[in-house]
Image (cartoon, rainbow, N blue to C red):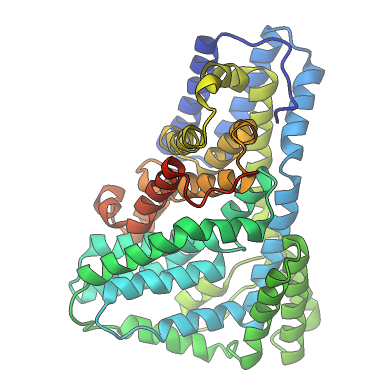
Length: 457
């Protein structure tokens, strides 16, 4: 959005007040009124439009700013449609169910919290959705913990950690695609670069949960039942692994994310059709409407009912609105004015990484919305990474490390409110045990200060 050059910059104080006002409105609507974030963001667009008109900026310029802002997310929008198709086709082909089934086979050992973290990580990686993972597999683990008299807070921390590991690293995740797209980095290159912070955070988290784990798992009836019900769907088949192998092959051959997801989706759909999972007409319709589980087990139906282009429209609408608001922030000079006051200090790699991380965390705390944290921070700092001679994939990694995984740690955030409701544990209770979410921003800041793992231009 740096091509949206305002004719003049407002004062830094005026810009800060207006930005804080928009943040306060978004926070109030999401936290107090419990509305979807689309509504306050659209109100923000109206306020910024009125501000621009008062500053005698032609409406055509404001409209152009909104359009150009939204255009930066078109790549992500197309990928989101493909992600919806991929999820529904992977459900039908049994690829996601077989990954879940394999994860549940790992249960039964003494390391309950560590296993909870690992299995929710695998499930999150397969689904690409922290919400779905927490609401299904996570709820099952919470039931086991309650029946076995294990710590509810530690169990919830393990679930949140695993769910957001999957949300962060899965090519199906909307935040992962958004972070790579908003700064124009290849999806799989972005995921590969994130491994520098994600793998150490995963290992350290696993060790922490293993140390805290009780000696034995006394009651795993719910998990065993869930595994048996998954097998009873008849979706699990040797051919269910083929779409995953195709995706891995295309990734290793460095094909584009769009091509990789498209080919894999078609492959999974053909496999499901040949196996007769659904009639061909119904199978193709799942590309838009998503796959719907129709089995005897309610939790299995909830687990397997997902995907489709229609299911991504909520996210797509939010991204377009948020980017339009971001365009207005730039064309009216609000963000350029604030950045102009601090740009003299953003010259070294360590200052740029630290400032990016703190900005992403700050927006999460102020607004409670991870999409805006990624979008606004990503757009604002691209120029500074170029000046510091840092590759953009450093920026996309920092956005995830300090943006995506921070949201569930904020009690009034979208993720925090959702997880409190689903897991029936307050954010403050599980926060000290959400090891993965706490470690990621610390590691990315540490690497920024030391210069380790940073890629230069």
